[in-house]
Image 1: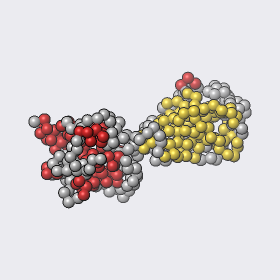
Image 2: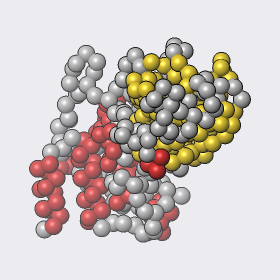
Image 3: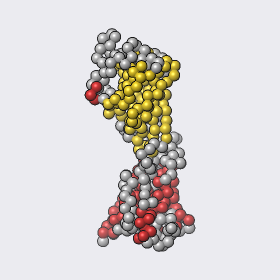
Image 4: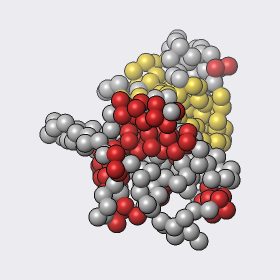
Length: 339
């Protein structure tokens, strides 16, 4: 193994190269699962409901995945459809939709029945999709839905369910109903949506997307690593950044901006002195600057020591930004490196 503070050989670097990577996400899995239950006033039953779902958040979400919807009613032959963006203007255009569920269910007027989608529907922050839940059972008791009481049926810190329109035809996307036009605007989905969240993993490139407490913790530890009397001084910057990459995003709270009292976020600390440069320490804060510390995607794990001046400069630049140093000092350092 390689001790922190010891001389690092090219062979040891090859080993560390595959370990000290700042992952954007660990795996193609969700970190947490949630369910959202909309209000249920038992206003109506009929054949279908169209509505929008969205991922709207300030939190460091990589994506959410919608795995199932739960409904109640007479049910029968059930289908679920999705369209990117929104259902608006597409309610009679079947070719704009993709079917993601098709099964027949027994009636269930009191208990919600899960309709698990063939594959999860993924939304990144700022994205939205339309969902259409339909029963082909003749009659008017297929699915329970409500009158619209407000434009948003449900919301939490990362997920929103919007109101939509009801469908009165037992034919999917049918254009005629029991009383002429089959669509009824200003209606709300009644039931449950199950979804999972994949959180981002911290790195300098997404630092600004993390809660205030997390950002302050990063800066505090980096400041401590510049003080010779601190044990943190023994750690290379790569070790510190790697450690924060593995810490849960809300470890220091979920507050994203200034405090609830309206106070501004703490100001940046003074710039690090020249004597505390990442490269002046005898313990070598930055013997190997790897580009994968700074890209959004987590980087490459190819071998080699990566000790080029460009890589070292990239690490130094990122650390200065985290410490709150000025752009002018970065430009001066870059000019010095070129000389």
